[in-house]
Image (cartoon, rainbow, N blue to C red; front, side, top):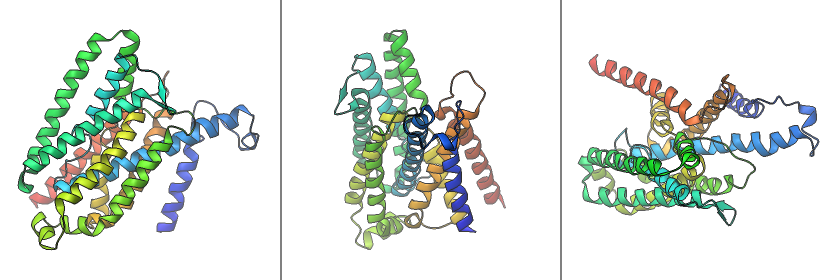
Length: 323
């Protein structure tokens, strides 16, 4: 059964590369100079890989954050990391920094610095709060999101029509990419994040029980949180700098995986990564299938689907508790 599910997922990922406004034929893909070959290898295939890595990073980051803070609502989105990255990108756009550095745009670099600064603030506040008051950290993240959003509106008001469009487009989250250069830092961030999750899987298992139990078993919780914060900030910062903020993936996928498998976090990190990647690829495929004049940003699709799924999860949880 698992082999069939895995085969179906692989087939779905491959098939998504053939979805788009321009139909592709297999016999034309072997010709390197054909238009269809260029579309497939330089646009469609990199986009599928980008969507899979982005969804995996968001889902795994959500799982790690929820385990570290023992709060099911803790994600890079709710902690304000995505808002910080968006603000950094808007500053670069308004400053006219459209140049590239070592093949990467300065807009992506500023978005990465925005995400990294937000993570530093979150870690600073996490040291001030005890393990029993992690809900306060969520409130801090929400406050940071509102603060960054207010600054973003000011920048949006000060921008011209072209700059405001670029800022608005960035805030919706999109997977537009050409070639493989932009995916390279995301691939590096993915490897680092998976390596960190695997390296701390035993500590995460103890931490999922309680902070006190982890301390008693010799886990250096503060050191572990600092290391994971660094790896998460690198991965999420690289992600948001390329795609913009994509909401709900890091929130609903860990919940769905936990409901289906009902295991500790140390056994769910790889499953969550794959599930998040597949989910975002499917959402991106849906955005390309919609009969619209222009392509719908994938962040809109994930918010629509994720909002409905999260409400259903909450209703089912409430129904179980009432029994």
